[in-house]
Image (cartoon, rainbow, N blue to C red; front, top):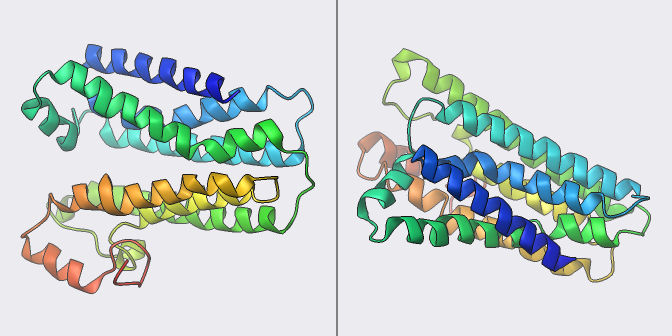
Length: 252
C-alpha cells in the first residue's frame, strides 16, 4: 500500500511539473501542495469499505487544511507571475528543466510522502477507538489552523491597503511571531500525527511533524523568505523584537 502512495505522488507531481512547464511558472507547485495531501488522504481513505471515526476525522481535517491553503495561494499568486524564489532558480540554474523536475517537483513529492505518512497510516491501519491523543490532536490541529488561516488573512489584508506598500506587517499574530503562518502549519501536522499515536507503532509517523517543522524553520521557510529583507532597518528592528517562529520565544 505504501508503494501505491509513492506511485500516486510520483504521477501527481509529474503532471504538476508538466503543467508548470506549459505555464512557465514553477511556483504553481505551491498551489498544488495542499491538493496533493487531499488526493493522498482520499485515496487511502477509500481503501477501507468500513472506515472508522478516526479516519473520517483525519481525512476531513486534511481536506479542510488543503483546500484553504491551495485557495489562499492561488488568490495570492494570481496575476503576479512566478514567485521570486522560483524565478531566481530559473535565471541561475543550468539544465533548468531537468534540475527543476528533480529538485522542486520530485523533492517536494518525497517530502509529501513523508509528511503525509500519519494520514495514510491512519487510513490503512486505524481500528482502535478514539482516545486521549485524538482529542489532543484536534486541539493542536485547531490551534495551528487558526494561526495559519488568520495570519494569512491578516497579511493579505495588510498588503491590500495602499498605505502599506513596501512596509512589513508587525501587527496581529505577526506581533507574536515573524512567521505565524509557518508556525501554524507545523502545528497542523503535529495535530494530525497525534491521531496516529493510539495505533500500534503510530509513533513512527512523528517523523512527519519533525520534518515539516525543521523545513519551515531552518530550510525552505524562514531562512529563504527572510533573506529577501536582510539589511532593511525596519526589518532588523522587527527581527530584534519578535521571535522567528514560536510566538514570544525569541530563540525559536
